[in-house]
Image (tube, rainbow, N blue to C red):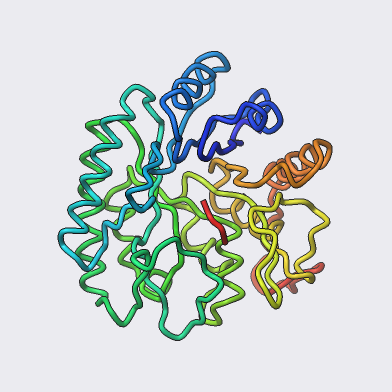
Length: 320
């Protein structure tokens, strides 16, 4: 469980810390803290318990701003404001010295015009545009600028930039420009969110969550792990991943996702981005043990070319 992490959103919640964090866990990801005291508590506990820290941008809550930086905005002034916001937060974070800083990508989210996105949650209309409103060439140009800027800042401030996939359009999963950028700027990594991947898999007939995991997990440093139920409606956002939650009932196929993750990148960190208050302490321990057993199980060798395959039960967002 040395690759496990928990999140602290809005405050450093000691009740959540004592329930969720276990000896040997890798660290804590902080987001939108309301007070200086919350940051001081995180620093003190990290030193006391010798764990790593990461930041889910921004570290400080600011009701006057959108939470996520709109660094791909169509508006030049809005893009400049997004980079300025990041700069201000990097200056503030110096005392925390986070191992990584995570940003949602793309932002604004680029939505496929063909898909019904009514169940994708946004806090503000400025957080998304449609694919028909931005060309692939513009997306590539702005993404290149983002990668180059974050790479420079990561060297200056000594952190690893991580881009967490938000809603994805065909620009990302049907083209290779992002892979090329990840190879060109190897210090920048990805975060993949299991609940968000499952939600888009259910909403978007053109999207394949398993295929995306196989394509991009090799570039990931972090997995945000939780479950969500998607049937006629979307329910139970940020629910803990438990073995009894069946995909047949609309829950994410977490075990399948984790097996792909193990095969593609066994060193990736797992952040439990769930509401542990929804389950008992015994169920939380079951969650941790189940995930750990999947990730540490030996991979089965692939069948020899031409050999018949054997399949057993096989198949071929409020988001932080």
